[in-house]
Every structure is written in structure tokens, then in C-alpha cells.
Image (cartoon, rainbow, N blue to C red; front, side, top):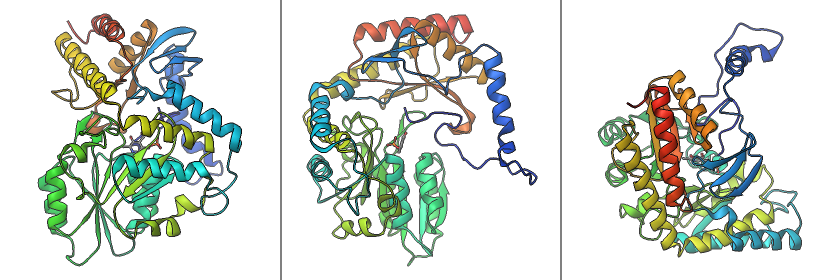
Length: 420
Ligand SMILES: Cc1ncc(COP(=O)(O)O)c(C=O)c1O
């Protein structure tokens, strides 16, 4: 989980303007008051959870209680893979705990070269650049690719890192309606023909777990002479014949110019990357501020990523189990009468839609008290003002765990009055 503290993902981080004051911190008073109200009501703060112990990819101790993890993006359960752990330990002993520098200077170690080779092999491409996080990969790629007089065209429900990448650069920003091929076409049609354009898409959208009609969107982008970047953070490892993502599943290899991804989900560690077959791709390293002006990842982290990515290349059985689990949970929750973000199990995210903040908080608390952790998400982080309990599945969830999960949802849903 990367969303911690007061601000979940997709949030526009600019606080509301206030009258000029000496104490710059006073603009946070409404947030502080809201958090205090939550704490006074006796409810656990859903954005301040502490994992006191982590037993496996699917179990932790939270508030002294054994808890099933159903909100961690650990889709392929790689965090406790023995080969991944061994690779990290070995690198830690051989190369020390950190790099103390940028990739441009002294921060490129043997393991950074290895992980970029693993990415080139995994995606079957000529170019791979690793960043310190997925957030920084989007920040860096978008702000570097499109500049003054050019256009970045993005889905309205894009991840915060995509929005921030737009803000960091100097290009004009154009938004289109979530997953609307028609709106994308219309907006591209209004832009000057000769100007450089980048269409930014996501394979799976992380709030509702819905999938983009990439095939149609890429066709529209190409018709208007735009390049395409697809963020495949929530599909790597299990979408498409070899787990490359939604773009592979929809037969778009060779048509998407840049794919951004993260190590913080299926890979099970931390880091971000972009891959491409563009012959000039390496030039990004020379101009990209979020690549240049920050320290590179510790060798132990990139070594765990390499081991994990290489295992994901042949993780057919895990892929099958993850999809089975997604179908089982989606089917069970539908049968219980919950309203879900997608009609069918389209990804490893199953979002339960609730009426309002109060109902979502009560459900979330009841589940936690019963020994289940899910992500709570609310506006403005969520699309269309929805209040969500977001469940993300792991290949390592057992059928017995998921049946317990369904039992907990049934009990909590009835107690809170969400289902009959
Ligand atoms: C679609 C998407 N892109 C990028 C990121 C950022 O990834 P990271 O956690 O590596 O910073 C996330 C993280 O939640 C995401 O959901």
C-alpha cells in the first residue's frame, strides 16, 4: 500500500486557498479537525494502520490481532518468496545497504544493470529505465516527454502520479472522460495537427478495478498522430499471455510507445520503471529530472526485483490462482448482494461500493475488528464521488481464507445494514 497519511492516491494535493496568514500550517486545520473527529468517535483511522508483524503475503498482525490482508497490491505474493529474499540478502552483504548517489553519478551498481536486463527480457523490448518509485517513473516520463507547445492527453481518472507528471512539465494538459474512446477522439481532433502529443492511459484503473479499452484508444491516438504511454501498474505479472499487462492482452505490442510500471505491486518490493522500443529511449536518462536528481534504489531492493521479475516470467500457476481468487471473491460478494465496481471480475481489484462515508467507515471498522484488512477509499480520491472498500487479491490467498473473508463481509454487511 502506498497510500498513507491523510491523502490517498488520486487526490489533488493543493489545499484550498486561504487568506494569507503567518502560520502556513493553519491551512491544514480542517484536515486536523476531521481526523480528530474520527479519532473521538472511537473509529480506527483507516489511513494510519500499522502492520505490527507481517506473517506472510496474506497475513499480518494489526492492533494485536491476526488479520487477513486483502488490500495490499501484493498480487503475485512475491514478498515472501525464498529466492527473492535470498537475492536481497546476498546483495546487501556484497554491496552494502545503499548507493549514496544518483544513477547518473555513483549510483549505478551491478544490480541496477541486472534489473534493467530482467525488464528487457520480461517485456521483450530494447529499452528499460528504472526509477526510484512508480510515482517517479510517471513524474519523470511525462514531464520529460512532453514540453512547451506540446500536449498531454489523459483520462480524467488517472492516478495522482500521472497528474503530477503533467504539473511538473510545461505541456498543455487535456483531460478526457474516463474510458471514453469517443471523448478522446473528439479532444484529440481539436488539437493542432503538427503539435507533439502524448496520450496517457492505464491498463487497469486502481479504484474500481476496471480495464481500459486500450485497443480502441490506441487506434484513436495513432489516427491523430499521438504517441501512447500506458501505466500497467495493476496488471503486470498476470494480464496477457506472458503477464506483460493489459496492452499485451489486447494485442497491442509494438503499438504502445512507452509502458510504465512499478515494483511495489506484483514484483513485491519498491521501485518504478519505463520500458520502450524507441531507438532514442536512452536519451531520457540525460534529461529526466526525477531520474537524475535523486539517489538510486539500494542494491538489495533491485536484486529482489530482478529475482522476482525473472520468476514472474514463468509464474503460470500463480497467475491461474490469482484469477481463480478474483472470480471467487467477485462471485461471492455479488451473491451476498454487495454492489461492486465492475460487473465481472476484470482484474485483481474488487471494489465494494457503499452509500456514504458513514457506511463505508462502519463497514471498514467491522471488517477490521473481525480480522480483515481492506483499503478504504473516498472522494476526492475516488471517481464519481464513490465511497469504496477496495479489495485486492493475492495468488497466495487460499480458498479457506477467501471463504472466511466472505463470511466476514456477510456479517459486517448485515450488521451495518448494507445487505439484507
Ligand atoms: C496506476 C499507478 N501508477 C503508479 C503508481 C505508483 O507506484 P509506486 O507505488 O511504485 O510509487 C501507483 C501506485 O499506487 C498506481 O496505482
